[in-house]
Image (cartoon, rainbow, N blue to C red; front, side, top):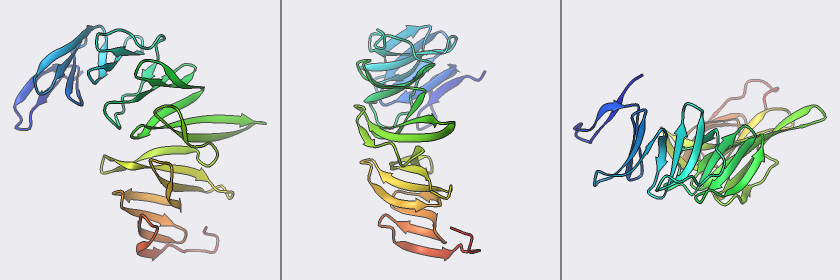
Length: 254
């Protein structure tokens, strides 16, 4: 496998390329050489944490996430390395949308849970999945089967497990990006009565900004390259067309 190091903005070597993984979370550089994890405080370059046998995937000075890749087990720990989660999880998401992370998305054989910084379980759902979609905002998704018919559901919850967007309208909720940068918006995908999929754009309070889009191609958070109805072009946040062209082909279009 490859080895990794760290360079500064002038391409000077900060850490040599001798680690299995090097990452930065907030003010800390996390190093993993396959045997020992270390957290280095920036800019002092002071080692503030080390642990054998576990890879350190996240650290903010108070709480960390460690992972044992041999048994595929993740734990939430405090700054001294004590376990905060009573039971191991297969995976604890380190997709940092806001720093420090206020709540953590964990997944296991029996489903998912939203875990507080003290290790407490704020919300748990069997056969569900959790993922961050905004600052202190998470998507909870699951499948329900009734009379042999399966349907997908998603709802948005905050860092305390409170419901922001309830079950019912959306099958999937995903974060919006612009050229790799996270935006304070997310999308909700739903199915119409005709079986066609449409997209809404929502803000982090769960309010719909734009609705009924056939496609959302790109956005910077203010302007949206979309296809809607029989038109394609650019919309602003109020739903006004700044540029519009027809996509009409046949009367069977919708």
